[in-house]
Length: 328
Image (tube, helix red, strand yellow):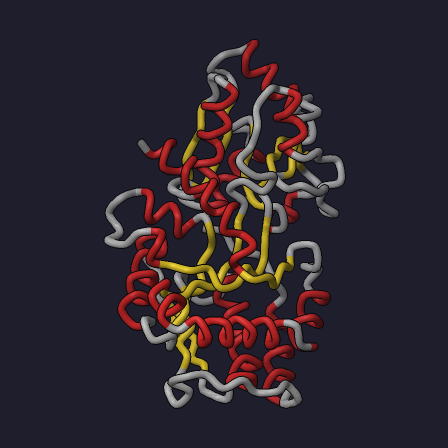
């Protein structure tokens, strides 16, 4: 799991401003006397936790009820997802997690729940994957990387954070392109990034914003998005380069990191009015000055979504099919 590196000073000041932001109209929901829990699938301090807490105060004002953020990390999000299904059938809890982490937990087959148990109510942020080599690698783009891999089977390597969507994406590329490239797992994203700087691997597959700390030392061979990144202006889109190589992607942002809020599908089905009211409340809270100021201060405008989850159902479904295929 990867976290955005965001400015904690701006987060603290934004939270202070949120406390006094009272001009947002309230929305009444069923069970309004019961606190709304935001169950975060990761430890405190990362981007998912930070944004959940940033959302919680204005959301409380919109709903007119208490909003409590609670961290339940572990097992790739399985513990938090199980807690949501146990406690959120009435709409009194939602899950803050990343996709495709939730899909990975489901696809691995031991989670005790299925994709149809959940409904993504909001897509908050999207951070595409970026593929990096050292500046002196002599590899100008991803097409050339593939050409070298075919010319020198088994000689090139890609570092990833093991057990994550980064690993799945690297294996997907190797499989689709039919290249003999070693995918090397590391305990976390920082170790994987350091491996390319140390020359232990040829390339690193990471996340756009997080890897920007390596800007001066690395070159991006692709960006996993349908548009170019302001941080990696040299990087062409992966979709465009794969088209040159005769490979298509399920979506331009395939296996990128989406920060999402998820509710129980049972709640959405049994109380569609309550679901719609909660969705509108989140959207309203998120578009207030507190959020927009924070996004601007941390240079996250190009990664910020704030869109209904229904718009991303085809993307997540296509990813799930590929994850299941690769996992077999």
